[in-house]
Length: 400
Image (cartoon, rainbow, N blue to C red):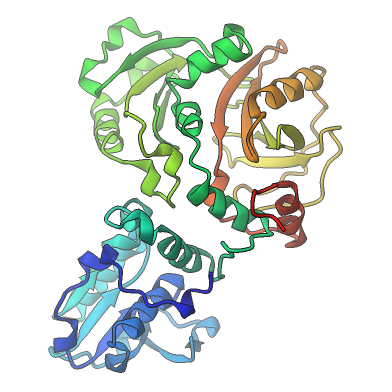
């Protein structure tokens, strides 16, 4: 969908001030995709004529022109009390930008919170999903997504987000409920031992847990605390993190709707590793129930690296934007055929799913998770032809 063909007037912009039309000039602080996205909104809502320029903290060669508009250094712009600055950047940058505005005595500036993934889709209707997903994708990648005739892997993952609403995906995405499914489908021996499950952090009795374990939320990604020494665990910090994580609906992170109806919980699992601080992670890319590629992750805690292989463990010459590639030589697992068989049993019936497995030093295989939307479908491929290669492997009902 080419977003320039649509008017952007969604209620998602609830955090923007309603009085923008009352200012003489509008400046957009941030010249990346978020800044360009904000300009699209201004133009679609008859505010483009008030836009003066993009402003940045530091000028570089790439900031000569953005969308054929000027880019200026904020220190050199005379922003009056009748003007307004819209801060359009990721949350990690906005604090510094706010401080910069204050140091320059800029009276009117607004931080646009809705650009964070956790807010972007929260207050829109399902009817708005396709258009908003297209805007989100454009904002994140700078490219248009094709939802009408998707061919590339990234585009097909976005299509699957919207139109493949199999309730089984929600059950399999739930890191707690999926355990019963795995037990029934391939056997309990493939499960990492469960140490406990709770609805909130205050229910956890740490005296009952071993010295090493992993705490994680069941309803999202990167919501975990790895405990290698219980005596050194900062319980107050862990509580603050889990109290915040439990309030997040991860479905609003890029419209990954398989997370929408998961009831948040905290689970504790047994700590496992291959080397001190390192766990070898095998991610099987399955298309229509067949493994076509295997991603191997290693070097956790020291700069996670990956290698890509085909199903015969021949290294594939490509990289993508989730983790840096590694030159590490990795031996073919002696039970690779078993891992492939397990992955294909679990992936049967899905156009695409990634099955994550761990292989311990003694050859024991443990289930990790089902991943239906890896990297949120925002991969940057090297070479780009791999986007087409993997896209061709996903068979959709609308494929022509």
